[in-house]
Image 1: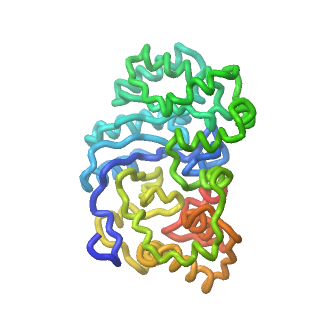
Image 2 (image 1 turned 45 degrees about the vertical axis):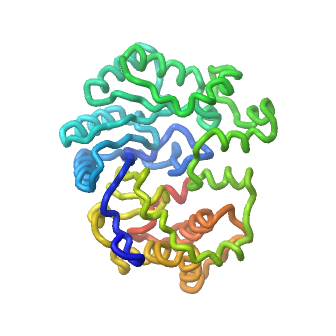
Length: 330
C-alpha cells in the first residue's frame, strides 16, 4: 500500500489455494458458499503453476489446499500436489470433510499415493455443521487411514469430537438434534468455540445468534475497508483470482497483483478501500437503485447484499465480483 488511496497487494503472508467450489456438503457456515450445485470445475495445471509462482514472487513459500472438497477430484488433487513440488511450493496441509471415504483399504492406498506427492498433513473437518452432511464414521475412518498411511492429522476442531460422538455415527445428524440435546443456546456457545469468519453463509448463522443492526446506523460508517489489504490468511481460487481479505465474492485478477489497482478497472474495490461501506452504498443506491433491508448483522453483511444485488438482479459481470455461483448458492 503506497498511499491511503491505493490498494496494492505487494506481499503475501499466509494463505491457501481453493482447488474447486464443488462440495458434497452445503454447510451453513461456509465462507465460499460451496455446495453440490456449484460447478465441478477444478484448477488446471497451468493455473496452478501461475498461482504458485505468483505467491512465491510475493514472498510466500507455503500454502494450504482447500475447497469445496478437494478430494472430489482425486486425480486433480494429485496433479496439484505434483505441480507444487515442481514449482517449489510447500503444501502445509490439505483440507477435507471425509465424504469421499468408501472403505479402509482404498482410503489407505489413496493417502499413501498422495503422500509420495507432498501430502504430509490432512486437515479433517470436525464440526456439527459438517455432521449435518457427513456421517461421523467417515471422519473416524479417514483419521484411521491417515495413521496407517503415515500422514499427520490436523483435526479442525477436535473440541467437537465428544459432542458429535453422542449421536449414531452411521448417518448425518440434523443440526436441530444438537440444540435439542445441548440446549437452545448451543449455537451461541458453538461460535465461541469455533473460529468462523463472518462472511458468506456464516452471516446468516451469525445473525440468528447475535442479532442485527439498523441499516441507518451502518451506512454512516465511512471507515475505509482496510481488511481488503490483509494478507495474513489469503486465498487464490481455481480460476487464478485473488480473494482480498477473506471477502468471498470479491476478486482481484492474478495479473494485477504486486501493483496498485486501477481505479478504472476496480471502481467498487476502490470505493470500499477509500470510503468504506458508506461510499459503496451511496454509489450503488444512486446509480443502480439498490434498496437495502431494514437491518444487517454488520457492514460486511450489507456489503454482501449490495454485491448480490449487482450480480443477481442487475446481472453485473465484472472483474471485481464473482464467481456468480457464489452468489447463487448463498
